[in-house]
Image 1: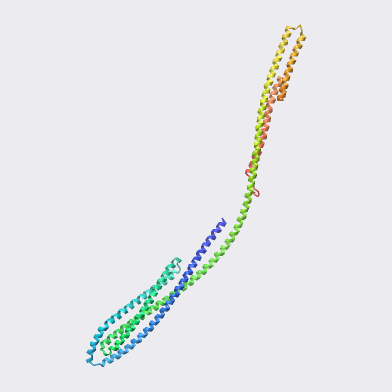
Image 2 (image 1 turned 135 degrees about the vertical axis):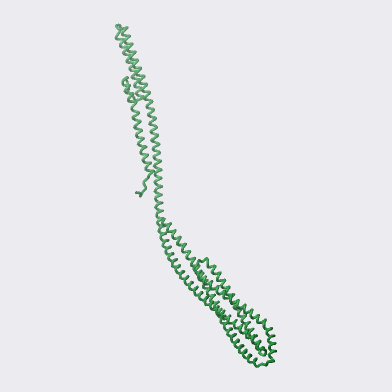
Length: 452
């Protein structure tokens, strides 16, 4: 369980290290992207500053040209006052014609100026969108790596907007060049209209005032662009601070990863020690299993021996029972023969006595001696026959019985001996069976070596 717990902890530590490394990699990629975008924005801001400085120089040139035109206008006013009254009518007619001719050019210039104002407004709105997107990017830097893709898309949109603003600034410069050309044309027309009336000079003054107003508007737009550039610089500095914070977080993550690696090494050492202990315990378990196998083999061998011995004992008991039955049958037959012999002896004795009585009664006085001798011989011969038969029975059965009284005692003795022998053999067989049961119990519940 301890090893499993240690492996589980090491697995979670490895997963945490992998997650930290993934976050570090994402942070590095984001920092690199931020650095690249910041460099691009700085380069674009520098180019825009250069373009603004060039536009400022052009504006200063235009102002100088306007001052010169004002001087010329003042000179024209002085010269016009000295003109004659008669030439005023012709001049007025010429001025009306020139006004008719110059009104479409004036409307075209006014339309161009309106377009320039619209482009400048769009560029201001795009710069505001850029500032808002940069602020949003500063907030999104702390978000998850899944939102970095959206940030990159926003940066691409910013790049497109900046490129569009640059193209529009170039168009504005081209329009400014066109305006300068138109101003040159107007100056030529002013020089041409010096000989014409004061009405045309007033119209030219109005055109110059409008151009001054347009120049002031362009100056205000340029100042707004410079303010937006300063805001972009501040946002870039904020992004640099965020990148530094990300670097600090990366260093902290590296320290955490190193600590996690040290913990992993410690866990590996402990797991190696635990594996050695497990191998030792497995070897010991293998030895115990071998000892158990040996004990089981001994148990089986002893069980086989006990089974063989019990079979032999049961065979002996069966043989003893058969012998007992055979002896019992022999004893029964012998007792029957003894009884038959005793009855025959009694019958012979009774016949002898009856014959002796008859002989004595009939021939009491004639030959007592001979008759008695014959009777005695007959009785002795009968007794000898009976004795011979009894001896033959004793030889066959191993029993000694002569008289009726002795036959009764012999019957009791022979009936007791087989039962005594049978109980003796049964007791011995019971002892053998008890020993076999004890050995079987010892084999079924063996005592292992080294166990308490």
